[in-house]
Length: 366
Image (cartoon, rainbow, N blue to C red):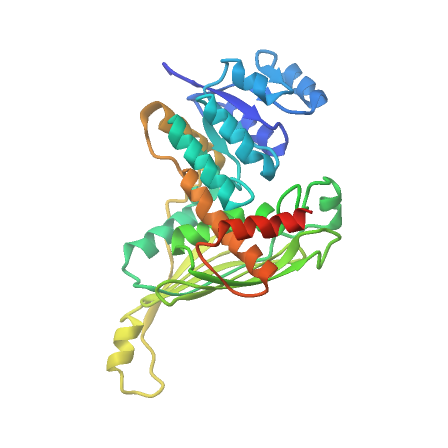
């Protein structure tokens, strides 16, 4: 390649090292790892033995001032994402942020404003948007052949975690370390996919249980009801306490039903849309005929590699990202709404009052 993006990785934990390994494997030919920043000096020493030509920094500011990087990948604790991203942008450095973009929407809005001011590329690591099942669901819903959405239901309880998981890192499921529990750690991809495919609801009424199944501060059990602008309703249920858990995403539309479960996408397509059938039908117990099928997809799921390659393409050739910074606001708006509903003890409208949410969150942080 004539040009390679010189990447600095901020945070060399599990996710950061996973991205480094992908790049070193040659899967991202337009990216090279030029620097790594982490507060753990011992960890950096171990990485340096493996990557002697890569610059190592315990202070991120030094890496940003070095002139060694064109772009940064941020894979640190949630609360630190906005501050680090904005620092990169102020240095003219392109930014890819691991999910979630931040802890509350006001942060992410500030990140987008900084990106626009600096002119850098700002992407979010929503790698599940590359999954062939969800891409096909998006295409079928957006294509319009199945009509309007009527009901959305996602039960995603296969996020089981034992107490040992939470005990392994003091920041996990704390208000000051993560800004939440299962909604902020395990479910950002699910919430992003839900809003990407179905749109954001206009009202959320959520019941959250804090430390129900574990000795933690934040939520580990969630049941949320949603209302959409067109009158559709939905539910989102998740937990880190269920085992065995379920992962069942169902969308009912005027013209049929889609179900993503067990690595398959199934489609029930009505011979006639339900509104049309109901308007003309005269038989008391009749229902529309339908066909059932397993939907064929391309089988491709590029995941993190596809997101990083798109990031490089956006920087080098102005190609589209998998998900830009604005998308980070939308999914976080949904999780913030669920938290706010629980804090206030009732339904909330979207977009939420960002100042109210911030103040309520800070009460939890203490």
